[in-house]
Length: 411
Image (cartoon, rainbow, N blue to C red; front, side):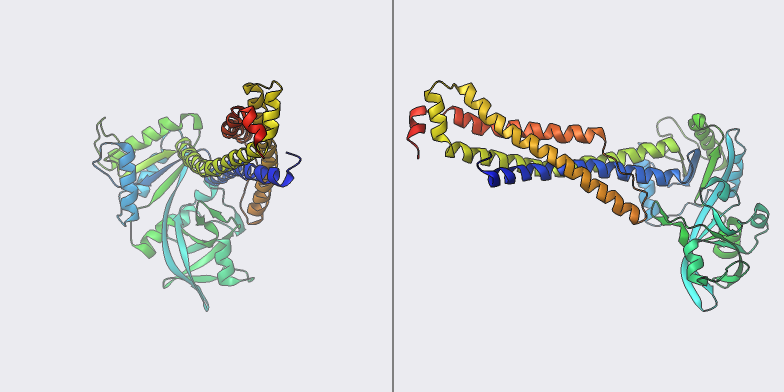
């Protein structure tokens, strides 16, 4: 190995790339999981969510959920979820408060500035439940929502687009042709789950319904719980209320299929996200396994060449008493040493690259947590040793089976 440094280094490099990839995949999987979970938790950890869903006749809940999502994407609308539903859910013993949500996209203008913006209709409880904060001014009150007041709160970016460095408080903006008074500006928050809240214009939900969109329904509502330990029971109570309000009768065989809503607890959200991130990690590991196999084949080829070049040495050893097992151990030891050494370097390289990725992600504004799960180290070093043994067996057997006389005759 020392006499052929270039050949050994190239063999080790193949292992290093494969093992480093394993470490990077595990670290990235952990970072993505924590990033997504952190964004979900930014909506609150003690909540349940009620969202609209397309009813279906499918026999399984999973199919019903998939079909409902597909129908919504294709433009189907459910208009049965209302503010009255929200008020009934607020009356549940374990519900502290709730806010509704509905969204539209409209032209927002001030003076000569015109921007296409997301108009988010909600009620006053939003600022108490969600983790958004006010930078300047205030959020609208429930009284302003009830009386359909023409007031707005601007997201951080929307304020910058319309007013630049100027003070926005008290100014009048237009949504369509209706004037609204700016009463507050939100703190910069950034993107969460693909939504950039800094580009939002926050409007009282009833004002948005009646003065702009001409509707009575909402898209979803978030309820804040007093006791998170009984979230599932509260979710069941919410389903019963909504089914009664929407005149939905169900049976045990397809309990959720006729629902035109979906009630989701935080635990269910986390479980779904865990499944998704786990599947992504497994997929990436399957891809990495290809590079590990390529590295293992490289080891086998190099060891095969080494056997050919050292035939006389093998013949000499066998002629002075070396047995089949002695030769096997020698070549297996060499291939295992190469892979273990490559595995250690690969782990170091993988950790370094993962750390640099976390620095880059955080500098880009993502809340990326750098960590490599213990499982990543175990899998990486386990693969390294496994491939060293598996791909070293064939060359070692070939060397051990050489006839000593024929081996000594080879040039």
